[in-house]
Image (cartoon, rainbow, N blue to C red; front, side):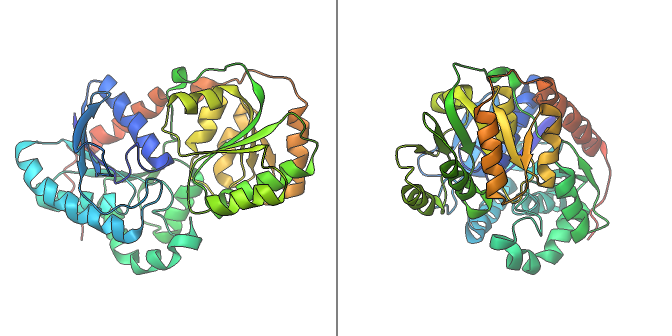
Length: 372
């Protein structure tokens, strides 16, 4: 198939949703398909390049930050993508469109279906669904409720990486056709290295990620010879750095900032960490946890629905926002020997890409008409 992938956040910009789409696109190349990505341009990134066999077009848009994209910036992507695709599709024919994020990418995919007759499938990633992040998007989802439903209605199907996100989609629109296909990773790319006394967390630095709880819990227990490493960036970084100073962790809390996925520093951190913690209040399907498991880290997770998937990989859980229980789990795992993780094959992108391939093939041959 000739697959068009629309994702306003394709690496190196964005977060876990972008990483998931990149893994899928590159695996689709290995399956023998052709994949073209339309995404946002950011600073000095080239307007066009080929990575892993995937053709990437980066369109001029407003975007101030690598890790965060604001609604008005997403609007510029919709405008730019429509302008680009109106010309591009005249010379480049696609069998199907795979959009990542219902808004803004799905908005473009719906327009393209009406304009060029290309069926589309959407993978939702969290922030594009009402109820997932009410701190940032509650009002926005209320304003966009009607177009959001039309985008979902006209899609061949929606894909949700988790039952939790699927339930939120159904809550917003009970008629939405949505199936669950978890995110996957290239498990062969991750190795266990010489493990050090490092507790690692990797995420965008926002309050709901619970990194403040991790730092507080770590400060409450004997931690001689241990460090907490925080990989990621975001609007909450300044407060987290100030908190680490107040907790007298300045020499034990290491802030790495934004790391390119699979960069040398990123892979060395995963390979060397003994423990990985994700203390989020909500998630969709955190790819970082899969990466940690593939790197033989012991994993501690908040007991939110999206983390239930990892119980088969020996994950340890604590009640959400319960700093005392998190401290207890940290102390317990810090005393355990290094162990090899099991069932890694269940995280493989190959299995995930095969399931998505079947969905895209069905969408490509469908004769479904737009329903407005």
